[in-house]
Picture 1 (tube, one colour):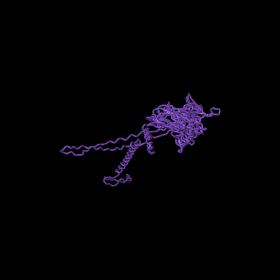
Picture 2 (picture 1 turned 45 degrees about the vertical axis):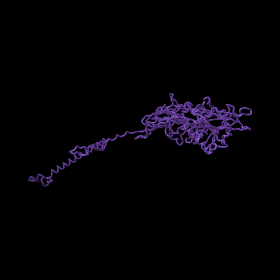
Picture 3 (picture 1 turned 120 degrees about the vertical axis):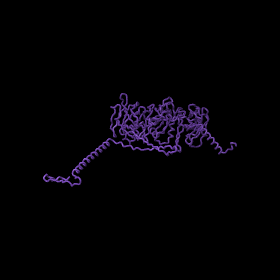
Picture 4 (picture 1 turned 90 degrees about the horizontal axis):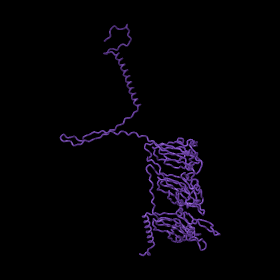
Length: 636
């Protein structure tokens, strides 16, 4: 059947079939789509500045021709795009024609313009080139009279996923809006290109005796270095869950990344994953009440750099505007090696005076920490908490530590004064599965400049503790309670562990700083010895024949063995007092028996002495004188 006779429904079905077949092929090939927004640092806009002439023929006003515009949809989603007009455009100049470029490696690419309802100028003519092959696109043919959705300006496929390509879009119009020369423009919101998926390293699996734990470094942590230091400023604001919080920020003024001079944040870590956070939108209003223009950045892990679209990260954030913004994350690192991290601002100083800012609030990374394989609670274990006061730990130098009297108790403190080239420190050793280090309450430490501390467990697990930030984030409702500075759990409860805390040298200032200690809390477990098991029962056996042998035939019956188990009741184990009492009782019974026998035999003797024999009369118990005595002998 000829194609011209196909109805509209058949064409739609055929188009859908072709699209589904292509998507199925892409899915089977394992390709992925990557979206690059107009604010991504990989997009290069040119020229950086343009000039509007004055009456004398010179440059009157210098400005950036590419304008950033942000809009909000009916679904409360925010999007941004760049647009440029034709006034002052020089299409024939290689350096001054208005354009943008993008380098990528992929098999297909799609370029989208901004929705028609948000454009400031009518769509004009543009030239889109891929690897030097150019095509003129009339923007008026791509747009309808109105619309709220991005518009596909141009696309190309079958490029080969393993080849690098260069895309460039150029504005061809140069009308200034006078007479027969209408002013037009072009826009760019985002592009999508298809590529092979990147092979990510597998997640790190900790070995026995270790576990992964998160470590947070705030912007004021001693381990964070700012370069150059004079280009970075600290801002303090009221946070949502804490009374105060801080972040550092810098601008593109004085920045020259083209010559290798970056405004950057540097630190080193041993982690398996990293998360970089920026300040909340509410916090940024404290330094810039006008719309904040974010400078693009990149994060370099050793020598591998990753460009970060900071502006789009803030647009994508739909959480509470009081919360920090996750700018970038990365996993697949090895926590067994040290990684040097550099967060660099990519915007240089603008000739048009446009100020762009970069900020840093915190970084979180996952590290290896010691973890005992012993599972709690331990059978028959008795758990205890031991509180060791500041004066029971080893302090250096001892005579420099002072005993301070606070409203909630005394504590020890020392200033950052070196003694024989060493700053103050303290140490403590104990057996336990967990430790807590507490500082004095907030009410005793207000308006003091705290020194950072380097706390180590067994000399090989160390952290820089930002004590000043800890005290700053304590709510006033807890001002009378000791402040938790550092803690660890999950250690071997039957091994002695050593904790050392030393003051670090804030080399960039000479301010007086204080180090204080309230007490150390040790968590330990006592396991008493198990009682000996009872002796096993002794079996007794007897053989009983099942048949009686015949007197004439030999017996074929087999004897049956019957086992009788007799349970032996263990005798009680009496002490020495029981035996003494038993002996004393036996002696008492014997004495009583002897006394009873003695008196019984004596009474029987007397009875036998006075009793007449052979039924004779009783004797006369009266007094018998010699003169009244009968001359007759008594009867035998």
